[in-house]
Image 1 (cartoon, helix red, strand yellow):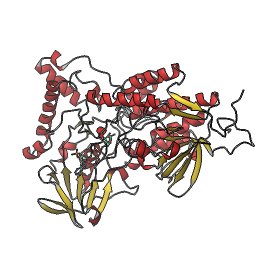
Image 2 (cartoon, protein in one colour; image 1 turned 60 degrees about the vertical axis):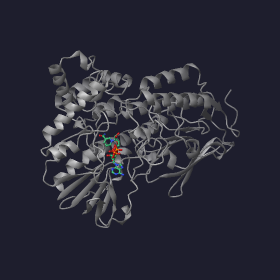
Image 3 (cartoon, helix red, strand yellow; image 1 turned 90 degrees about the vertical axis):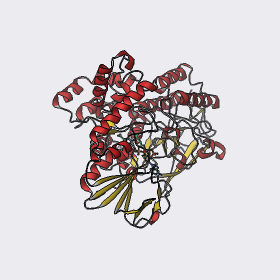
Length: 550
Ligand code: NAP
């Protein structure tokens, strides 16, 4: 394979690869596929010992999609879509990991993937227009283009609890779950954290452990996932409807099949409203946001009624009234944080081996060799699960040792929060792309991230066709997009209480990390870029590059 610029054999030494992708999650695998399909030499480096990204690391019991499986998988190959029959509407982690391994083998990508290669440094060399990338094992490679597909939820967060290292039992983070099975049987287990990961693992641990103590700082508005097997009839429907399904998923604002509802809560009298809330409660996953009353996320009164409906459900399900009250949020409305979807979560608190510690009443003071200490004393444990979340959005990119033009580190450039154009490039870091990173939209991630990968690939093809080998966003374009993101913060239904503002990580700049304009904004801006012949970007030939083909 020639380099994109078609260097003469006696010219300056070409980089080892045209494209180096970092991260073998759903975005990175797709980027590797697209880059190779477009004729670039490409490699992928992955820190883990297997592919899957989020779905490799988060292999805790109960981990599963809360987007429908067939809407989360790839759509670039109709054959792939048809041959992979998802067992459940919301697949569990082992099936997802099998799927991603299947894709890698099906498209002969494995030989281009290097596992166990955590990137520790990536430095741009301006004269040659290349990136030199180093992994933890000291191995180095050079690439014309660096695509960091490192994900937004890939750096687990451990709170700074004093004595954490002194704990003598087993200790695991949901986002760093071991590949060898963890045995809960007969053990006294603690789970700290009740976000989407905590509420997935808690019911499974309760089934096995001698005792389970849940340490909850803030309850969430949890509603049922309503999972189930994909029936033969549904499989047949999926097979027949590929084109229609793809069309919806390629264009829908949040990348789901769920359709928006056209009525506000005020359009219905109380009895019908209640019946609709009941219908929502029984509906699958994210339909509770997308297909709900048009005012439920935006009108305080409508939101409060829906919250009260959920609170009643919690009171109906949880036998101990005091415990039920502790499980009902008081500090935020539905949709102010990313809501978790659950299976038998509230029911778990009726089990005799399960107890709840409300950290608002008795905060964690520290850990000892034996267990966790609160104002009530030390509770001893054999095993502690940290379900305490992630350094969202920028966590991985800022830990990769990325250094751009003139020795500027990404950590310096983003010291007050990320600055991007399209959530894909940042000024002063030529030939670096980060699809699926900060400033992407909330929604069904693979759809939005896939749009970004498509744009990155089209851009590389555009450059090659014109004999350019360096591209960098203009600072003005970066400023415009970042200002749009900042303005979107005020309009977002998410509140500053959400980790989407970085507020879960002490010392992190409080900046909105999502594109609230969503896919429509991304599509519109990509159209503008293409129509204006990439004027938002500066393109060049590196100093030691031969002249472009005539
Ligand atoms: P999270 O939503 O950030 O939840 C972290 C939990 O840890 C919260 O309950 C938080 O309490 C608690 N916590 C943090 N620091 C603490 C401390 N010092 N003491 C006590 N508790 C503390 O993280 P997550 O549950 O891993 O979920 C992150 C995201 O991953 C989700 O929002 C979702 O996007 C994704 N995810 C998706 C799925 C799926 O179904 N597909 C499953 C899991 C995760 P506070 O709320 O009080 O801060």
